[in-house]
Image 1 (spheres, rainbow, N blue to C red):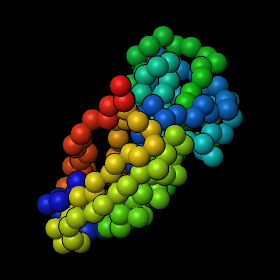
Image 2 (cartoon, rainbow, N blue to C red):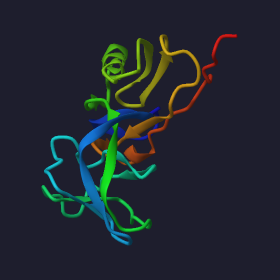
Image 3 (tube, rainbow, N blue to C red):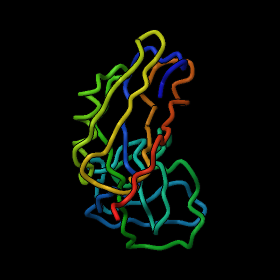
Length: 174
């Protein structure tokens, strides 16, 4: 829902929590630091703004700080024990979606995600007032993973306040 937020352009991405992909390399963690060290260049797999899972904890890859083939900045400090050879996973997200995407553009972007299945989407609103999209999952019955929005590339006064509201929680058939 972007209504009333003054969004005038840009794009956003959507991810479903728990829809992850294992990154084909190991990392090193240092307690008290807000970065991870890598043995290999992970830039083909991990970008700024991505959500990653490390030792069962979710971190955001920071939009600021050094990003190099051997260092990836995190948006918060890692407080666990220092360790090496740690598995890292990434929460998969859609490609960037225009701020004024049609219902079919949003549907296509979501159906791009693995395990999302078919969806139905509708859209209300206008460029000047913002948009509200309604999404119904058609294939994967039952409760759906939490929907996360990456609003970093939206332009406008309150773009970071875009929100997701669950209208009806999925249920498994009896």
